[in-house]
Image (cartoon, rainbow, N blue to C red; front, side, top):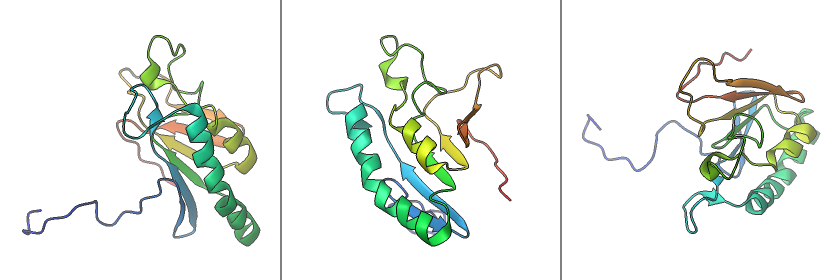
Length: 149
């Protein structure tokens, strides 16, 4: 850093990968990683592995629901849900297929937003905001400013 310090991770951030957190009044959860497209790729998961990661989050989501009347406000993921902002044909680009297991998670826990990256946007004609059940799925690549009341 410019002040001479060495840092090993981003400061002022919460790592929500595989867990839930609160940021003020907002309830957050995160699921990093993309669909496995290399045999030993870091942060790459099969569809079944991501399903297990989601199952591990469910107790905390139910706890939120019981304590706060809602499970989740914002789900932050690296990859998109299957069929939303991903490639249509996994045979043509397996690195950019979305996760099927995100869809029942959205239907059951109804976060206000799912924010994802991974799917690069090259033209303004590409869809980057889709409503699924009660959730606004937003591709934030390369960045988005989202104002939340």
